[in-house]
Structures are given as C-alpha cells and as structure tokens.
Image (cartoon, rainbow, N blue to C red):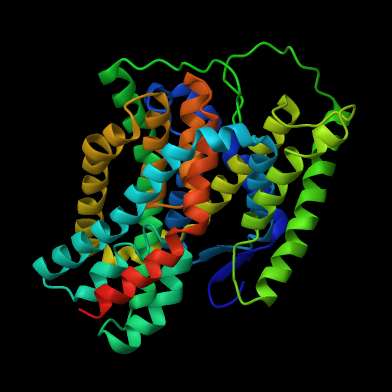
Length: 402
C-alpha cells in the first residue's frame, strides 16, 4: 500500500481473475437475461469485480491497482491459437468479406470522429474532447488514447486529456461487451438466420457437445508446446521488424507465424499429430481469452471517470447509438445478411467501441451457442491489427487540425 493505492501483484491478480471468471459463469447460469443475450462469462464477472473495486474506493478511499503482466501473455496465447486454427482455404474464402469489412471499418473511423466533434461542440466542449471520445479511445482503445493525450493536452486546450481518453476507452469497453450479444440475437431472430456450417469451430467450445475427442494431459501439453514454438519464432520476427522501424503488437507476428506453421508442417510431416482445430486447443484458447477479458475488466478504475461522467455519458451514449444503427442498417446488409455477417456484427460492436479481444469475446459467445464461423475469427483480427491504427493516426491528426 502506497498513498492509498493497493497494488495487487501479478500472481495474485491472476488468481483473482480465475475467481472472477467463475463468479461470472455462475451468474450467467442463474440469470436468464445474461444467457439469452450471449453476455460472455468473463464480462459478467469482470464488470462486477470493477464495481466492487469502486465500492471499496468509495468507502475507504483505497484504489485497487492490478499488475497485469500475465494478462498480456494470455492475449499472445490466444491469437497464436487463432493462427494455428487458420487454413489458407478460409483466408481465400474470406477475401470478399475481408475487403468489405476493411472498407466499412476505415469509413467508420471517420464517422466516429464526426459524431464526436459535432456532439462535443453541441454541448459546449472543445472539439478535441470529441476526438478523444471518438476514434482515439473507442476504435483506438486505451493505447491510442494514452499515446495522443500529451499532444491534445499541450496544444488543444484539454489539460485533463489523459483522464478523458482513459475514461472514454474504459466506458467504451463496457458498452462493447454488453452490445455485441444482443445485436446478434436481434439479427438472428429478425432475419431467421441459421448457421450453414455445422463444423470447423475455430475458437470457443460449444455449451452442449459430445466428447468425441480424447483430451488428457498429453494433448494439452502438445498444444502448449506448439504454441510456445510459434510464439518464440513470432517474438524473434517481431524483434527483426522492430529493428526495421516498424512497431507491431507482439500478437501480430505470432498470429502469422502460427498460420504459416499450420499450413506447412502438417503437409511436410503428415504423420505428426497437429493440434489445429482440436478440442485441446479450443480449451487453451478459451482459457486464455476468458481470463484476459476478466483481468481487463476487473482492472478498470471506474472512480477515475466520476468527475467526467456527464459529458462523457452523453458523448458515448451517442457513439453507442450510432454504432448500433450503423451495424443494423449498413454493416449487416453489406456484409451479406447471413450467419457470418451476424457474428461479425457482434464482433464489430466490440471492436468499434472497445478492442479486438472484446470483439473476439463477443463472437465467441455467439458461436458457442449458434455454431462456428471460422472466417470471422480470421478477418476481423487482421483488419484490427494492420489497417486501423495507421488510418486512425491520420484521421485523428486531421480532426485535431480543424
């Protein structure tokens, strides 16, 4: 404890994250609303834990701060598992949806800042706050908001830019987690959509499934070994890319190394048992994603946004409304009005207001109940990893210069 800040060490935070996940799972089992609208279990538990931390702060003035090194490693595990499950055939099949998703996403970055700037001016706030409550914190997430905060604070009349950006990203993450499932449920019912692909689960263990595949400690260890090999190669590749002046999140090269390995090794060594699309890999993948989301949400410091609640609630309420309207009337029709479009709609809600892992969590919750959509889990992370940050930087600079 230092200056009323209680720092929870990484190992203990990791343990608490598991407890939080189980709490969310039990709540989902007993609250029909949470099951009906496909709210992910770690979202339920993580938000409840964040509210608990807020209550502790309100009563005692003590701030909980979690060390989250393990959380970041879990993200690398998860996306590497996505890569191991990927087939070039899926990537080729995702060509047209990938292009449409890319165009819609890049266009929505601009749209998000237009909404933010116009709404900020309408309620008497600086335009820069509209950018912070737009693509800088929503599609951009916490990292982009923090990166741009010093520039906005120094040159655009928003001295508390860091707090505004972090608060917007935090509230956006909550909205992203809560909207994806209900959007998918509405689209499935409204258009009477059925999943036409009964197998090929790329992530997410269905809630009801017969155990036709043997799982033991050996199969789990084999999965972890292959994941570690891909991560080590991905790490070395990321070092080389960084030395060339290109900065990428570690999960990006790990994802691509896993894709390459999964589409070469089984053909070079046909007798080798490759863990792609096995139940053992799905277990490791689900564990990594679920715990990542639980740790991320329980670590939210909700008290940091109390003083900014009024204007931010207005701005983010408008952004959430605009996202839902965009998905229902633009995104879903242009993506094809099918099951893939439905799963991507849930993912886009998580992505446009939160982050790529949130989008994947939303899609996972839908596919666990309604069946697999492997293409969705390939093309959405690709768009999020490569194109969004670059475009967003130019868009943010443009709107700040107006």
